[in-house]
Length: 123
Image 1 (spheres, rainbow, N blue to C red):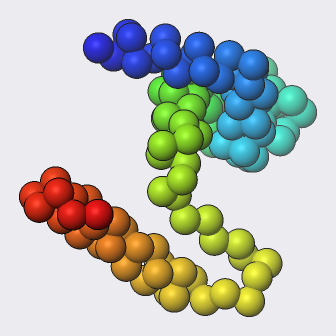
Image 2 (image 1 turned 180 degrees about the vertical axis):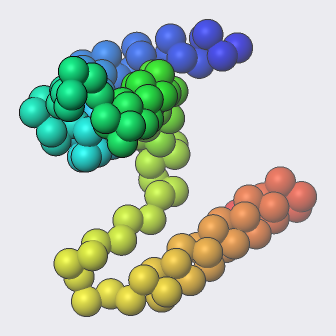
């Protein structure tokens, strides 16, 4: 099932997969301190410093998870899922708490509506 699901997502988003990977790398991986230093490779005294070695290990772990992250983003971009995502704009005058509350209320209303339709065949 997972293989089918993964291949189906890739089929839907094949045009955007490279762009998604690059954008995720820019947001999640290139913003680390290690990647900002000389292209990610800084040597001190003939080797990596302890801090750079730790950051390098962290970057390696993140890049191993890159495939899973791309799949998760592709899943969220499907029309059926995307329509249920609430977006909050930091540049707006909206209150985050109110946006979260509205989103929860909308979710509950949708759940009740679906429940009524299933149980009583009411629209």
